[in-house]
Image 1 (spheres, rainbow, N blue to C red):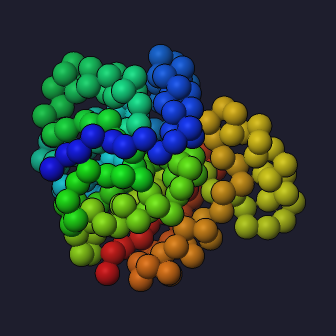
Image 2 (cartoon, rainbow, N blue to C red; image 1 turned 120 degrees about the horizontal axis):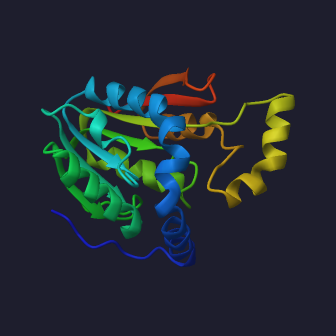
Image 3 (spheres, one colour; image 1 turned 45 degrees about the horizontal axis):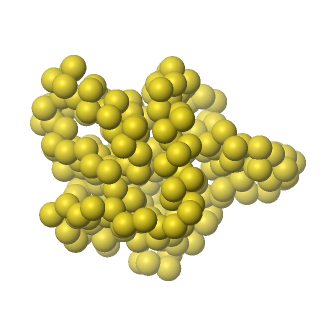
Length: 216
């Protein structure tokens, strides 16, 4: 059962405003850049079942990558983004998309154990409380369900890591995170009894990565 999202404070309001500004140009900027990573994430999720939640579905760039026999639900904080996603569904006849809802990923309005997989693309490093979002992803997964994250994760150490940390404030202004480490998510997995399957590189040149975890 769906519920209306609750406000999480000033940060959530600011994010909604930022996404409203990005919505008209988002597809032009990110479509081709993120497509290979998005397709990899979708493929990984489908390997675990057909009932899938896309957390932070945005303008719906990846909706067409799912097969007709999938049962896909998408949520996003931004109504402006979702408006464009709904247009894609209607224009392309994407009948496998069963619902697109305005919702905070840290307060999902779905019952426990609702999905085979939760996919979050280019999202987890930007939410105000990543661990709380991961808690929610875990809650709505069935036993054996999978969390799939497509994202850029900062280098663990070395010269590149230092550069990423230096430019992090600039990156945050344009909606990216350069210094968020995959080790933070791995630590969450270990605390919560979640199997951390691993991280593998994807296009372009390994800049984006696919991270997978499985619920016990």
